[in-house]
Amino acid sequence: MDTTLSASEIRGTLTPPCSKSYAQRALAVSLLCPGRTVLRNLEFCDDTLAAMRCIETLGASLRRTDASTLEIDGGLNPRSDRLRVGESGLSARLFTPIAALCDRPVVIDGEGTLLKRPMSMMFPPLEELGVRLRDGGGYLPIAVCGPMRGREVHVDGSVSSQFITGLLLALASRSEEMTVRVADPVSTPYLDITVDTARRFGREILHREDYTEFYIPAGAGYRPADFAIEGDWSAAAAWLVGGALAGEIRVENLSCLSKQADTSVCRALERAGAALICEERAVTVRRRPLRAFRFDATHCPDLFPVLVALAAAAEGTSEITGTSRLKYKESDRAETLQEEYARLGIGIDLSEPDRMIVRGGPIRGGVCSARGDHRIAMSLALSALRSEAPVTITGAECVRKSYPSFFEDLENLRTR
Image (cartoon, rainbow, N blue to C red; front, side, top):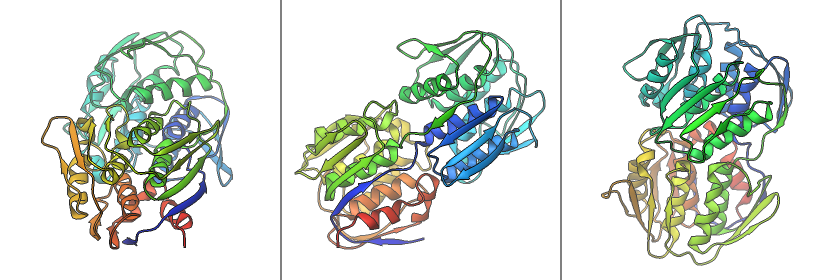
């Protein structure tokens, strides 16, 4: 699908989809939890649907009771020896250790760009826990056969926190105490979400302040929950930046006290000079003249694309650090942003290690590609709001991965 956008103000109020991070974790724990769990405020985007397929394959029974509510009867009992995770990196790394709880082989397979994303960080910890592995050279597909045994395990956390999430949630379903030691943890706010999700299902996971050690006490496993999923700050960040670029936007069902990593977009907006109002359950951003800013996105790498849209609109040269976290996303996001924004007249310098320099300036019209990456598509759409001529985004349908109604919501916010 190609989408062509022209410059426009945007104004209004909207509610973003639910947090994918919370939704996928809650679905995983619902599988591991005997009894019936109810999940509310779900958005059935591609990544959530991938997680739903995974828990059904692994033994859960699902029933939609309305447009955003799901009842899950849990119980780990695989119905197939093949787990298909689609293009969801979180599902791949989340459900591999959960599948490794089983005493029968399970193959984890994906599709698209996920087949090029590294999975080798999972292998040493799983082998340390007695899991038998057959891998595809460090990539999907891989096969695991458990069960996991032991009371201590060591994990390299320098590439992604997603596998640590899966390992913690899987191990917390057992009755034994467990210590997980993590070297060089990254994306630590996502681990806070993991711990919070386990707590909502009655299981405590304790950790040091530097996230290098997690302790799971002996216990009876998870209890069923009735869990309303909060709004997604990753999706909300796009609209908040959009308000700063092109008008005024109020986003509801958001808490500035959320554990989601992308709440930090508010700091970036303040540094850039946007007008920001935080309420108990909503955030409003209004356009003001924007200035160059510095921001460290190491622990919130999903913000990079919208931060580039913000920096491109700011006067001067902005600096965003943490580019090492972008290589193994849906695309190599640093290079993709550099190449696609060059088509729109914005220079991005990647010559310094772990650093992106964005020179603000006008957006010229043209044709650019989403490159199969939902967050790139959203970033380009935001910049098109202030373009001197129409911008065509090819492959814009990739927003289905996280936010199927993104372009519909954008059209409803445009002033006429």
